[in-house]
Image 1 (spheres, one colour):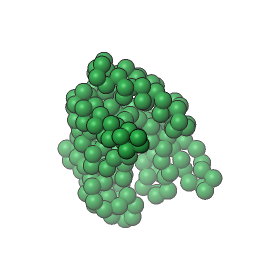
Image 2: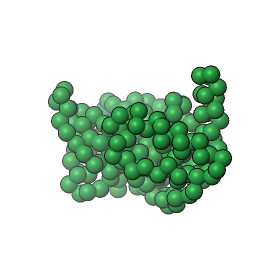
Image 3: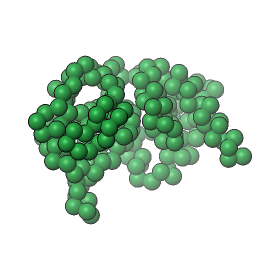
Image 4: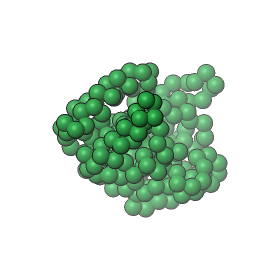
Length: 195
């Protein structure tokens, strides 16, 4: 059984996720995960909202486990946590507890093997090398693998201003080179619009 956190975001393996926690069910989830040294699952909300008694009407069946790596009290009194995405998973069974917390039985997908960045996509690795430092603290503690196709594709998919359904599609792809092929035209299009 894994706690599930439905969000209006797509978390990728190796990606950072800062969260502000204010609902009791998620404060309890964070406490449990920290005590048990276990991750929780992040899944994209397809319909509905993140908060409220019912919360997250419909969510994706594919998500990413998130491990809490830091926490602090925020100036507004809420709990702030920093997580790192770990493994992609599929939800085989899902239910909601009495307190509203979503739980699921999940099956972890095999971790994507490091794959050399093909020559035709070297410019994507170079782009990340330039852009990530401009994003401030968010990526400062994320290990960098600019020559790994899987890592480059995941980082691009999470930072590009594309629709959530497109990000989810990229997460669900099992082939890192296919993910780059999907994202590359979007980079070119953005470059063309700036010229």
